[in-house]
Image 1 (tube, one colour):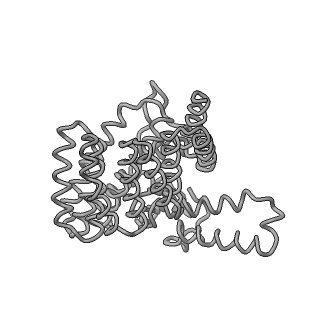
Image 2 (tube, one colour):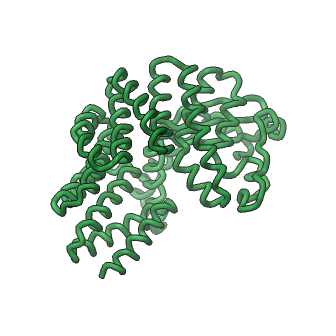
Image 3 (cartoon, one colour):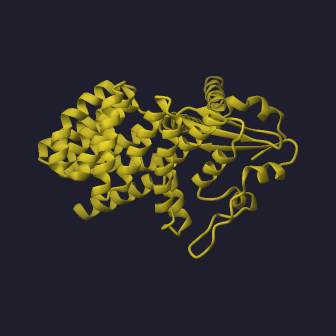
Length: 366
């Protein structure tokens, strides 16, 4: 019955929020089977959309098909809000799949219906539409749309929408070569996240909050590093703020500040370098939606490097983990070992390629 369906859905959603991708996928597949068997169309559409989100995060090509199927289910059952949400997610899948022109057309067609559904749905659709326009070369219309969204989001009291728009605007300004404006815009976005973060006292909640918003810090750190690659003090400080635990807490083995605790004071770049022994190499990662970043620090120098976006890195990690979780007899056999070695090689070059020589010479990696 419905209470059982609610319980299974809640368990699956908890797994998703905790980042347990495989458990969440199995949970929502079960919800989908149960909902279809019992004719509960809202649960069916919602579960299929969430499976699409999980597939999107894992760079699984099924994401668009799942969103389209969920949208059709919602439309057939008369669930207009779910239908609109599904169309919006289909546009996101097209953006992530490198098809921004198609995404733009789809999101434009969906915009009148999203506006009818409510202000939040309208603003969300506008942000994705502006992103699609930016990525498809319609920079002027994207710029106008981002500015409009910022005004509307401020009036509506929608800080997450405002932050998303600021990040898109910063990326656009960066692409147009206006570094100072891009940095100023990215600082506004970071200030909003820092303000929201200050109200979260529990470490585990703060960790999840920051993981979902690392893109904000990543683009600001990258912009600052581009402006002056010879002085990475400020990009390092931004990277430190992006983590729930400071480097000082990590090195001390602390889990981070819990409710009522004061967070350990962050170390600045000079202090970190002074504390590193010869042969130590510190690697700091920040995942972003369009690119990620690696900051490599030893006692002598610090360098900043661009990496692939979050979804590509996470997909490679998931694939490698699946190989590792197989019985040893499978991956130690010649074909299995070849796949294991190839995926490990690919992951190494994705995460460590820019600093491979320094990694090879290091005595200790942090």
